[in-house]
Length: 129
Image 1 (tube, rainbow, N blue to C red):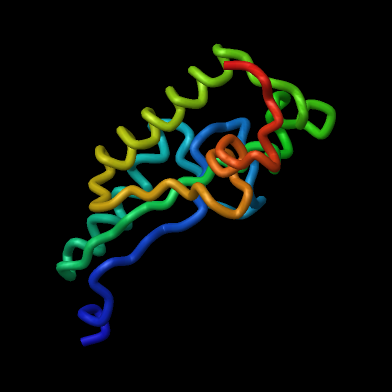
Image 2: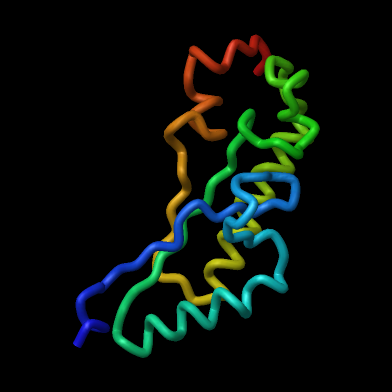
């Protein structure tokens, strides 16, 4: 009976690149080897006619282990290559989520995470293109 209470569950705050740190015990989805373990969760939800989504987070300046976003680099403009690498990482994780069978994909873009940092005139003081 309880299995029918939830129709959509979301795995939240999932990091998707090895260089992005969010929480020591958070869920990672940075490599293809992670697909199978998350697929088991998705398949279990589907057995009970549930849907399961996944929310990805790129912490941007909040990241602790990516050289681009270390404390000394916070106010530096990113290179075109770094932007391309980030776009590639977003694309790759969306593909992994699809292969794992997720029904919904959400990208966390608020609370000062990467996309919010880029769009906010407070945090984005860059003068580049």
